[in-house]
Image 1: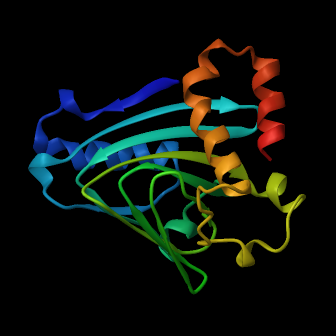
Image 2: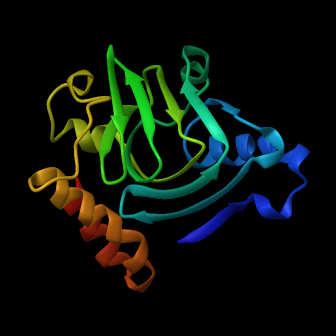
Length: 187
């Protein structure tokens, strides 16, 4: 995975602005807050699997992110974000539902509708950027699927969680055709 952001090289006063600039390009346009600005640190890695974008974030101090109606009006991407919690916790709110994720849990968010995310002081997440058209062709209405926690356990949630968790470790060795096939499998 390509590293697109590493805050450790920046002065603490510049970190939030730099995060905002890079993260809005890598994910979607959003609002964010940090718990303690001088302590804020983050790293973003990204790659693709066919039509899916894969983004891994390590964060210390980013406590809140939201996609608002104003962000959506200016957004060109038409994507879902499937987030797998790797470390720490996240509480997601969308479509009247609230889901709290622990390591191994994952949930889907629609970037074309407002959502809110509250994070623990330190967290890591793996995000899949899924084009709307690709997911809507396969599933029920998306408003019934967002902010619903899939738990890592003995069932399908554990299988999917473990499969997604191993992608960053093996993706560098894959050729583009293999990446596209795996992207289709994930969908």
